[in-house]
Image 1 (cartoon, rainbow, N blue to C red):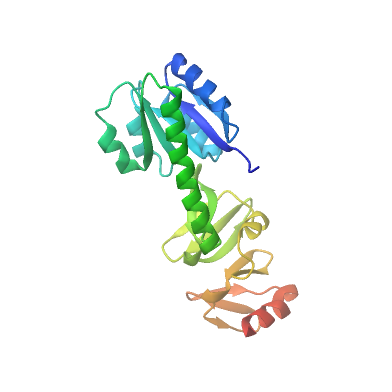
Image 2 (cartoon, rainbow, N blue to C red):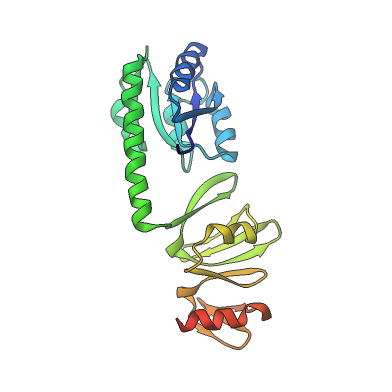
Length: 233
């Protein structure tokens, strides 16, 4: 059995937490990992933890559910939970996969979960076809997806890594060694203790460096032979 999908509940009503937590516990494919009672708690948790599914109330003090979706640069797949239906149409602009009206009944909850897993199956098929096309890294406290076909090279920067892409440079909270494990080996290679490059982005090679977008990147002695062999292929 695959690992259960990580879920969070964000709702200011304890009664709603009780109902949803009970429903989630009855589904072995789901794991409740966090319960928040306002948008601030949710934002703080999502900065540090990847999540698959969020049950989100719309009407909350300070930051509403809709405002939270607007603020977050990226957010988990979301099922909205509310006693009001007037935001149903707007919610789908933010990738919301379903809309549960309170009181939430178990059969309707199961229908929403089936819809969530149907989107996951589509995602799995796309991943099988594409293999790996993004890498997830933490930038400015949030997890973001970097498209691998846009990544030029990565440069070690202490406990961080500068990710140079075709669009901009990101400072990610990850080490070069950790990043290397996330990248497809056939497309990327470490050429120096401080540099990982996209092999198809190399424009020129010299004795001691490669050129990518007018940047000269050093080649470590221990990596020269492997780089030469791989560029011949």
